[in-house]
Image (cartoon, rainbow, N blue to C red; front, top):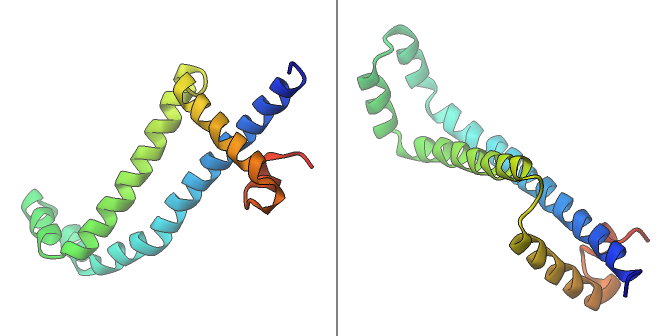
Length: 126
């Protein structure tokens, strides 16, 4: 059992790194799709804000362009959420025991499934 623990911990660490990469891929994809749509939709408002920047202009610009506003709000929100999660894990010195236990269960399910699981080759060193 002692030989299995270091291997399990390495696999948990690989799965944790994979989740971090996946989070940032989601953030980048959301900025490339929804973020660019939101910025493009507010293009006319940006020129108005450049000339007359007031909070009323910003408020009405965002209020009358709901879809671009929600797109940008989603992108900003998901970016802040991922940054907060990374910051908390950084200052805490790693992931919590609860999250580690959850990752261990996931690794055990992946290992039980074997090479047919899509994440199997990413968490094993084989």
